[in-house]
Image (tube, rainbow, N blue to C red; front, side):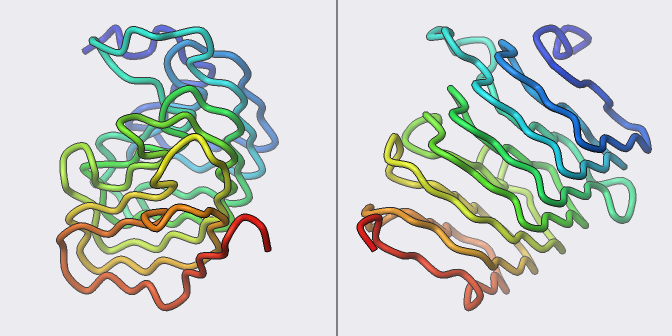
Length: 185
């Protein structure tokens, strides 16, 4: 829908756009909306969706990339940060060939108890690598991976929740590089 850009800090669907050292603060829908060729380096999103409570139309996400599967790589994110998103800090779906390195997810409010959704909304996330450092206590699940295929996860999640990193369904999801540490340590 053409109205998906309203409330976005940065909007670059279906193009080979590069964002370097960009900041998005307090946007109502998405801090960064990039698909099919987007590249983000050292970007920061703060408080996307702040003040919103009605998510009946679309839920906010600090970084939103749906769909992103027609190029290789289809999405590159390096050294990006999401801070206090009022929805998902990161939402990537209908996705393939995604490269996420050193993504920092800090204290998202999440949607339905989940702070980041990788394949969770439509169940398609494949042939990708995700390196993420996540922390916060506003959700039970900081990183949610649903129906992933051929995806490698690494990084560290700091949380006292037994479901801080949740993998549902899928195949060949490699999680040996992901460390979950209790918040008090």
